[in-house]
Every structure is written in structure tokens, then in C-alpha cells.
Image (cartoon, rainbow, N blue to C red; front, side):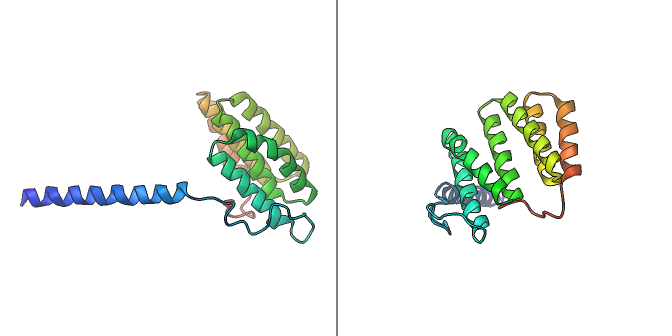
Length: 172
């Protein structure tokens, strides 16, 4: 009886490992460029601004997830400029937050904090709580990486307090 139970748990562990491997394979084969709803050459206008900028954000996310830091940083200024021009604030601040996280990934907490402070100032001037929340999130992550737990805790609490529930789910 004991042998059968042990065999069952070995089979169960093997099954779980296979499921995890299949999931990871699916994630690694994901390429947002295959499913782009808008051609990269599409000109932006008031009618399609969100769709084009959303696809650009997905491209930035792809660069982030595949460690293409130079490509992400090269495309970011145009993305932020166009988001400002067409007042796509959600995409604007999550793109900027992605840049801050990219700096953290490259072990440059100072640049991440500077980026977050610039983002916070911008959000304060525009009176956009969601942008302030994103800025505090990046600062909190940067301080936690620097092992400055008191500042990290304060920033993360502010990020939660500043989060604007009117925006809803910020996942894209």
C-alpha cells in the first residue's frame, strides 16, 4: 500500500513538471508582433491613437521581456511623446513605469529613482493619481533593491493609497 502511494505521488510530481514545462514553452513562444492589430507603419490619428499606441506598448513589453534594453530605451521617447500628444495617460504612465523597471533590471537603481521622481512630478502637474501611483511603485521597488526598507515601505504604501480605482485593472 505504501509503495502504491509513493508511486502515485511520483506520477503526480512528474505530471506537474510536464504542465509547468508546457506553460513555459507557450510563454517563450509568445511574440506580440504576430498578433499586432495595427501595422507598425500605421500613421496615428485621433481615431486610432489608442490601438497604435497599445501595439507600440506591447512591442516595448516584448523588448523588456526579452532583455532588449537598448531597443526599449531607443523607442521609449517617441512612445512617451505620442502618448502625451494624444492624451493616452494610462499607456503613458505604464510605459514610463516599464522604463523604470528596465533600469532596475540593469542594476541602475539611481536612474530608476530619477525616472520615478520625474514621473511623479509630471503626474503632479497633470493631477493624475494613477501616474503618481506608478511613480511611487518604481521608487518603492528601487528602494527595496537598495535594501532601504523604510523608504521602500513608505513609497509602496503611497502607491497603494494613490492608485486610482477609476482606472481599473492596469494590466494590458
